[in-house]
Image (cartoon, rainbow, N blue to C red):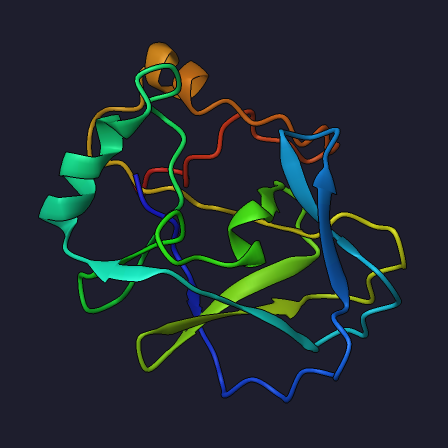
Length: 164
């Protein structure tokens, strides 16, 4: 299970004071919230963490037997992954939504989170994880990756739709 990013231009500079804060979320566990209005197109934060191989990610997957489907892995175009649980930052707490207000953009092996639209102060940040699983998307697998976003556009799963 990996998150997928879209291609992107270089991020803009971030302001001196953080536009975000981590706190409890109604969507899932912890979440990231805007401390002030964030204009559409703004760079918000880089997704940080240890760069690892897919093999190492598969080894680490079972690190939490109580929640084996929850990871902080973000896949890169070069086949490597970022493990936000190891040397990560607040970006790892951004939750999924089927109707996102942010997007993840990859540039030169780095992941940058940008606002897709104006985000109001106090609003939770989210992006579409678009998790990629090669295996069949059975009802059990979809339940394991159930979406809790509550959007009217919710597809019910964090998984990216399979290409036909």
